[in-house]
Length: 93
Image (cartoon, rainbow, N blue to C red; front, side):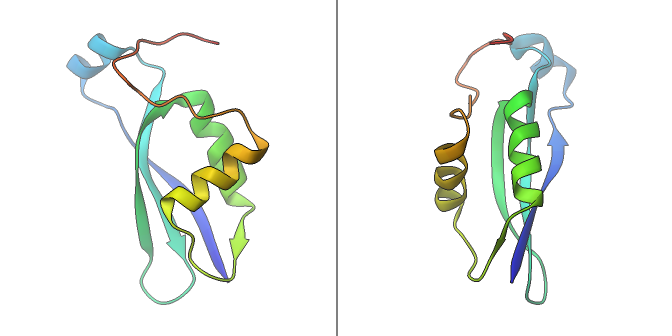
């Protein structure tokens, strides 16, 4: 079985935060299951989506490693679409 968890890595650059706001989270998805952990990069997304994705991943187990696209596609089948940073600023929608 393979398990998944998020690893928050930012943003922590104050200039970046001044430009985009402080409601973004980015990092990686850590994959555990056979030997050395694997990972998928996670680009900046709204922090509320980060929290929902993190909680969902904490309960996910798969028999094969899922790709980044498979993980996000399956997550979004049961949750609102992730708001990715696209030159947006923070809003709390």
